[in-house]
Length: 468
Image 1: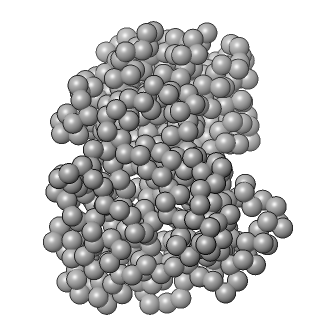
Image 2 (image 1 turned 180 degrees about the vertical axis):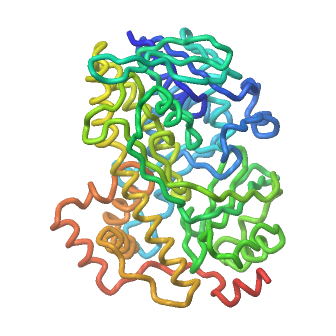
């Protein structure tokens, strides 16, 4: 049995804590925000103060891949999420009408999820954590430093020191503090570093808000949840209890589109998009939310597989984070939490072996998703900027060309469409599904002469007029 301290009581930190506790480990969660878990999902949305979570009331999605992790590891939490009003959402419903074979296939159940707003998901997990025997969750607890000393030729972290002066010992300290994690600074304070880090501005900004219907229904989707329309994209994500989120994704440098922060102009542009205008048919639940300054970042504590420090594990967004428009963050974080459970449970008290195994599992299971997401984001941003400047987009990379071919061929081929959908919902990456050169060649052949369906919306001139 290991003593595990998890820093951060968000969705992935709590899920990891529950998984580890149920495997017999002694787990303590330290959460800086003091507010207790609300009694109900409604109170969570209305009143829960979570200052440590930047995107707490922004659009969120539990993708089918993440639902699968909960079903395998925490089925009672998934049941509680359904009971809280989570919407059953079947991604196979986006099967293009041009595909002749519209019938269900064995395995299509993998595309189903139950999704909810972020505060509702966290309330359900928080309530489950509070009920869990042997799991300690301490809210309003700030960590000030790591406790560390040399061991076997490398710095070993054996716990944390709270701002109050109290020490909390651990065999493993898990950083689940998300995008704002202070761990690199704390590691530097004990002589570790610099750690391996890649970071760049994602180049995107979001303008969005939530809505609720009067009858508990959700608008039917006539376009994919993330729809590119020229120099902007529209994000439409269903939520719980008849709620949904709508957002525009634009390039940070596209100054005229900053007019989308004004609700009247935002609404005017949405009404000019025929496949999306009906998402306005509800009561706004919050003010316009703008979110920018998002960083794509990747951190690694064992460059080339050699640990710089032991006794520490980076989890979910503390390890890597990207532009959230693909809706992968929570699901990949849950996958990472399951990896943590498996890695902790498969090792004894050898700290170096754990650090090496955790790095290997993360690089094998999560880093390819990060790389694929980053490449797609860069490709879309380059396209948006080219359209804004009135020039041709740059030639696609090899990965972008394959993805474009999959999208085009998937408009009429049910097998290729399912390959694409697997990648979209965090089940299987395109790079894995089409690693065989013959399979990739078959996709390019099927895509010959086809192009992705262009969704209707304002051209650049009309867009600027609506925002003027």
